[in-house]
Image 1 (cartoon, rainbow, N blue to C red):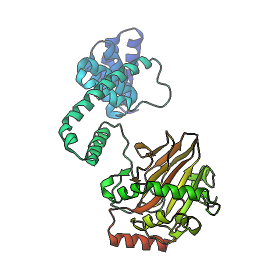
Image 2 (tube, rainbow, N blue to C red):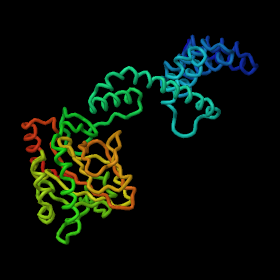
Image 3 (cartoon, rainbow, N blue to C red):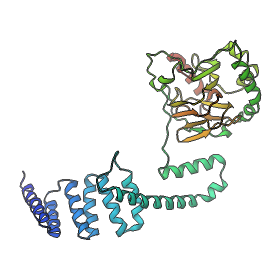
Image 4 (cartoon, one colour):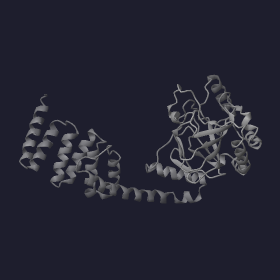
Amino acid sequence: MSGMAQPAAQFFAAADQALAQGDLAGAAGLIESALAQEDRGPEGWLKLAGLRRALRQPRKALDAVHGALRHSPLDFIALCLRAGLLEKLDPSRAGEAWAEALAQRPEGEVPAGMAGVIAAGEGWRDRWETQREARLTAATQAELAAGTQDEVWKIERFRSNVMRKSRIWHSQPTHYHYPGLVEREFHPRERFPWLADLEAATAVIRAEMEAALHSTRAELVPYLDYSEHEALAQWRELNRNPDWTAIHLIKRGEVIRANADLCPHTMDILTRLPQPEIPNASANAMFSLLAPGKTIPPHVGVNNTRLLCHLPLVVPPGCWFRVGGETRFWREGEAFVFDDTIEHEAANPSDKLRVVMIFDIWHPDLTPLEQQAVSALVAADGAQESGL
């Protein structure tokens, strides 16, 4: 042990003796002397903080806690001590301090004797968060009142992000990621003026879907069908599963005649939409059928240069669809566009079949030249997309 370490060890030993004799003040002074000689880490500071708190010296206790946090700034116990001390020293800061502490709460059971302290701390945090959210909402009230639907969504999501109530989601395609494209769970309707015409044709499209579904000539296949050896574990439980099936109209750029011929009006509508043309990859269009009581687990798509559009055709009550941090309930005839390279999942909790028309479109941020480049590169790569 070094020359400076020896006196520190003696001070710590003497502190233990003083503590055993019930001399809290003497033990605290000896630990301070030891730490002045050798700052060994957070343990000594936490011990000192506990003594100073017991001696009803909250300011000195807080200084000691800060000494521990210099070594371990995310230490749960130290952060709880700090928050508890601020309840007395500066109540206006206690709620935020508890929010910081509880964010580091470890998995599983809390340390013995901490349950009551943590419950009280949650109350401080909750009150602080409620006051903070009200303040932030009031600060943007004028903008929320004057904004478009999309602007309001972004302002509210911004507030939610600041409050750490929402996770920041990113595009994570399995194969192709084009830089610089807007990452958005559900894209705003105004970017797709053709949505209104598509929705107006819902009845016609649904009638053709129903005719195809009941036709002996139609080809109804599993939504996912890929070789078992492929590295695509996210869909494994649904691969070739009859719970999630599809009537393909266009699959990887090829028109599926057995189905398309039964849906002439739907095929005509698709010709007027900005679908990608990528050999062996796109365009794609289908009727997606999800069996009663079934779910589609969280997963991501292949290529962020395209978005997907859903046109709900048959939707029993309760059927929902989540993309990133936003969950929507499908409503018959209400279409939306989303980024399938952001994690998404779906469920049909009803006892009836759910049917949605799905097709891909170019991401609207791509220029015509960029579309050509994407098509050329993906075609040259030879990769075939699994699923839509």
